[in-house]
Length: 72
Image (cartoon, rainbow, N blue to C red; front, top):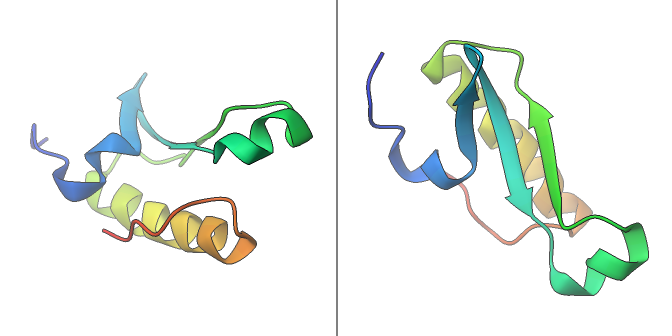
């Protein structure tokens, strides 16, 4: 596996052989929903697949208005 995750590295991380998506939420949402970030398993151990899943999930977050624009 490559040690470089590319531009999406700050939002994708590897734990227990699976990649996870992690994205900080805007401060104005912290009190409203009670969390500071979204963190979920991409349920994949392949970096290429994880990047694709990341892009889809990140786009959903942008459309929902809870994430800044950061498309890899």
